[in-house]
Amino acid sequence: MEQLLPGVVSGTGNDGRTITVRDLLQHTSGLSDYIYDVFPGPSAQTYFANRWRAYQPEELVALALRHGPDFPAGTRWAYSNTNYVLAGMIIEKITGRTWEQQVHDRILRPLRLQHTDTPGTKPFLPHPHAANYQQFALDGPMVDTTIPYRPFDSGADGSMTGTARDLNRFFTALANGRLLRPAEFAAMRPTVAVPQDSGHPAGTRDGLGLFFTPLSCGDGYLGHGGSGFGYVIRTATTTDGRRTVTVSAHSRSADPQTAARQEDALRNLIDHALCRTT
Image (cartoon, rainbow, N blue to C red; front, side, top):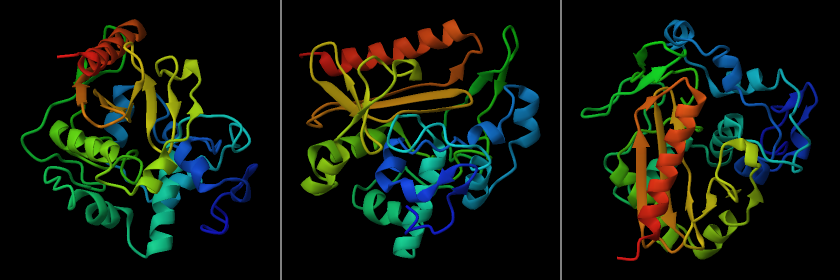
């Protein structure tokens, strides 16, 4: 990575010379996740005080690099939004065009995903849209968090809006070979184990931005979910792309047990949808 972004990843024990692009996309880089710096405390006060602030990618990377690596690159797995911020910077360095431009030209237009966009730091959603509600404290109120929290997910790590139909179309095209050439898709498929304490179902493995999760009926599904204040989204497609489902919830509890039940319900729904035989 040092050859692509000279001097960007250095200091506090971080060394871009030891990190590959595959490490970034597969979350084996060991780099700290910047989101813990831009949201230091789980409170409604922090959300309202900081939700309008926006950062440049270089600023987010600098925040992450104030911390030492969680582990030597390539030795373990841990999800870090910092990885995708750096990937976006690499896209622009190599192509001379932003990651947003590349996404529109290579994915959105060819697949006719007309209801998917890359809004950057614009905090408002196109109508109609769902409303999100987050409970920040046990026994506290549900807070309307429909306006995105701009300090994170404002760049290559998550600044996209869309519909369930568009998500299904994208993952179907990815899995059935319409989007990428065979060699390109094959490069995404080698996986590493995801630790069981990471919040993912047992047996989950991670490729290049593409998770593989076992199904109760055998084989498994490909996908990549997302979450934020007040919402959880899970998209899954069978490995041949013949069946795809997107499920979402738009309220999140501060109670860990309630949150776990919500995750279980989403995963069970995916399992039933993809395992049904008729």
